Image (cartoon, rainbow, N blue to C red; front, side, top):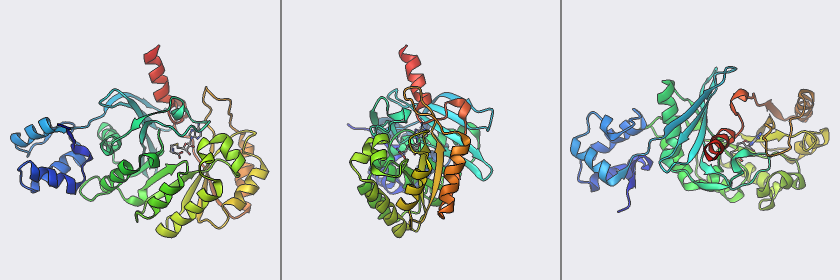
Length: 347
Ligand code: SAH
């Protein structure tokens, strides 16, 4: 018999399971609370649940709990990077960022990634597998339980392409923002994508209030292709059009992410071309000086080039921020911690 992944069940699904197990419907609400509010790390910890129901959970279900393998805290800004071990031994990483306006957790959506972006460490060994809704939720739950701090924002910007794991992502978002669970506001959830056009349009039609961040990284098709293989499948103009559609359907302003790479996409001409590409889109551009990884030759532009790029965009009427680099001293860039850890294990 296939075991049921109980922590990935929505409230309605959990009710169905509880009834089919011959229990009263109100038990579903109690179980949901134990799993998604009180963050119980085992069915044994569920005080008001009868032993017979706990036994059914043990025999019929899997109960996902992530194991903390490593936790590094930045001395600079209190950012914490976690390495978690999944039930099957795969490793994933998640980051807690502490801002004045609250705590933000950056989660992984897949173990590995198959998108192949040239500057990214997460994709070097390809995709291993999709994460379940429970494994995405657990990253937030374990960090919250570990620190005792409330998490108010979630960004799906860690390892993996969230829209390549669409159904699990949607279940995760619905459960995370459900009033029976942690009840994080949809407006405080951001999903970052490399630009899977049909999925962006599908997401727009879901009537959610989450923010879409689009990894653009180039101002024309040729340059985007050289940095991101996925650009060969979805043309840059179609990607921007899908973002326009997302705004029309949801009213949520788009974030364009643009990693600045010295000598590749950081010149004044690039800024000019970028301005015309996204003209008229209700958006904001987040500039990220590229985080160099060992395996690639890409480097950051100097501070002046970053400011010049920002100024050029602003002169063209575009809202711009430069991403604060959190946790530079603790393997900040996507996938670096996981990669180093796995290599050490292999050595
Ligand atoms: N697959 C999704 C989300 C994961 S990556 C996406 O592509 O958006 C999160 C963001 O970090 C993306 O904008 C990605 O392009 C960027 N990124 C990855 N590696 C980076 C690096 N070494 N330096 C700067 N940004 C990087």
